[in-house]
Image (cartoon, helix red, strand yellow):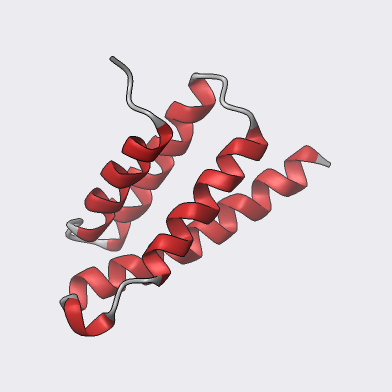
Length: 92
């Protein structure tokens, strides 16, 4: 059975948190976005998917995460913003 977008989002957040480098964070995100595109998910849905993940990552408390995880969260949010901006400009 394929994963729902909520399950996929949860899985991606776990991968982001436990990545060992910024490059690995970006690679996981890029792979997820590519997979959504390959499954013909609408760009608007992908943008909402990115917004939801970014919002969820924003809720994490820095005191509950180690330095690597906090760095991963920050890098992921920046990367989500860039991807979303790219999607918006592509849609114009």
